[in-house]
Image (cartoon, rainbow, N blue to C red; front, side, top):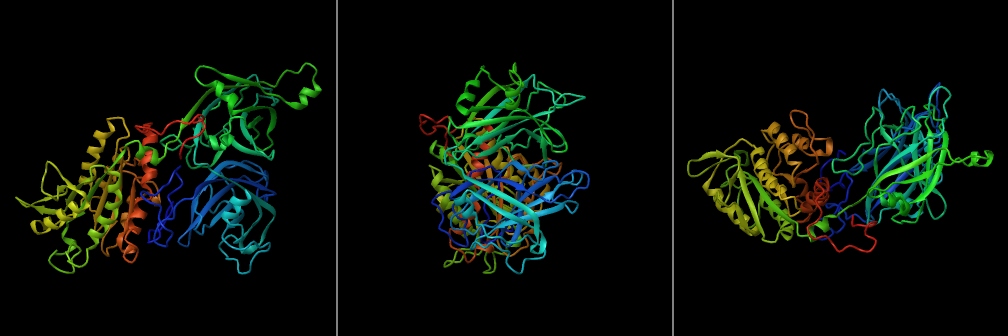
Length: 623
């Protein structure tokens, strides 16, 4: 999600899946630092009485979730498209980081989707919207509704969490009611202990509901809550262009795209694609909670025919682990009453069930994973002569320069996660002794066999010592240093253990000149145990550097290959000049725990010494 970078660091993107923690102590709430996540919240959305924008059929609704960051609305995620339905119950579950102290503004927008144009374009018909903003509950639209926006209503995210279910009217532009349309948002806090389960279903000999062909079946799973209400957990889905439901590379459910039910066409014995769902969503991590599974015959006009249903629990489902299979009679209650010899409307079989534990950043750290910190410093001529007080490298005995401030702020946090407290310190863009040839990956202690320094103070001393010995030159090439750290990370990857993760801090005063090579190096590094933090020093225009940060889209190599993980975080230091000394570190390091978990989850590497298992650990794990 694109965020404008500034002193207020945005919350991490929804990927993600997506555990987020702050390294070190939880930050104090302040305008300059990201707030500690209190918890994660799942939001389920349904609508009723939507406007009918289509001439021949009913509207094909899709919900977009937007979040306000620094005054701008940014799309966070979107639901599937439900064909020809004015009362949709969306299978998509929106994940939101919930901050107790922060004003969090969310907007839900409902569109009538046109398949050829996608969702959220000018060709879509706006069906209405609702904002969640902090304020007092007001039953009527406030005056002065913005012409371009959706009416600002009053349920706060806190109220949604507290009430668990909020139903509000949808509004069109200028504060006009969208007829009798309403939107319902149901929230559920994610427990700290959670894993996910992979399920593979098929059916046999289902009833035929079509006259000239066979049924086109799809499956829905509902969780029955304590109040006897039913929550849609999963609807078998794939991309509308055929394929699998979008998945993040490390195997967790990813952001939604316009979807259609995963219909197995013209088949009374379908085999549905395996899918993954969190145990919290499936059964609230309670094995005995009742589940209702329904099989439908798909109808493109939205009038799906009921084939049958059955009830089960996750406890019963677990019998399908290993080589075993579990099956249920798919029953139609009306047929059971009317037909004397009625047996079933088919059989549904659970072919396989796999439980996956989700480890947390803390699991890996407590398991012995070390964070290896490398700093790379820009010594190009654009920094100015270090002997001149205007230079970014000027050593003022009374005031550290911006390079030193950034280095110390980030390094002091990282050193707590490295037992030997030794840090690699590199330079680039300078002519170095003895031949004074330009180098883009030299050790600032001038020891080519060992570029490590003793603690952050050792890095500072090596930096100050090397300045008089080098000639600032250029250009600003950072690909060689990224590749150098990547080679070390690749050696670590081959150990197949979660033992060492690498953070590369690049301090530079300008836009890199080897952008193509840098993009290629980052794509290669995204497959390795490393993260890259780039801090822009000075007053240069860093607009082009945003390309390297995945906030504005997926970074790709010059050949078009996307990064496996978003591993780059870029911030301009000038935004933190007046902030507290730790604000920069808290902002740039906020995403590192998520990136660590993403990498090891993708590689399926557990912590080296995981926490002791609890008796019911098959249902619970730290997030």
